[in-house]
Figure: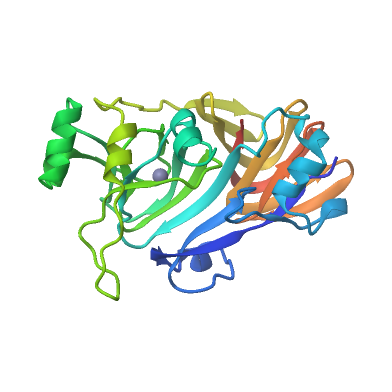
Length: 314
Ligand code: ZN
């Protein structure tokens, strides 16, 4: 079992910037690059395996053709998607459906529960998370009247914060935010409000208010996360969330730390520093911006260096 290193896919967005180049050294297409799909098997942007016997295959192909790498799962599609988002402008205010709604209304897509680790942000930046309506009527009325300031809840963010965003939560990243997102493998978004922005041709972007109101959780449910921190030899393991959809951790390594993973596959992203992964006598160099999967049956491995990782599994 070898680790699977992945080549990211980049997406231009009107709210994107160039931080994926300046912070991560990626070769991005333009200065409006908003998303790095780092670990993806989604048809809208699958990652390509870079090393070993499966080099050149896409992650979705591998999922179908080599299911033993993933423990012969029952799921039809690779369930997770890891992205890095560079919000250089405000993103539209949006909400995602759950599995049940997406299955019926979006051709069998998965729903989208997501979570964010704040890699970096401007001082004093907000994030939009949730709303203040107490009933569906109130949500419809305030939306129709454009009473966004009263309706939308804002929270202050800082680097290192973690937010769990279940499907049905109205949310938006604001300008000046760099985030690692772990989400269900879905590309379904219902736009609620786009700040009345017009594109270069003077057009407003489409809103999806009816579906958005259908899927929004009313009233807003707090989803605050209390990280659990565990000190190990040369490593700190922070557990952010263990949910039905995914579990997400931060591993901080100072020196050489030993880990083990037997019966799950792990998605790993290097978010700071550099070092190496040592497994089965092989040494794989790691640097900020490297992403890999450790297949089922990996067993014991070592991480060396001074580095931080976001690790997830389903
Ligand atoms: Zn979202």
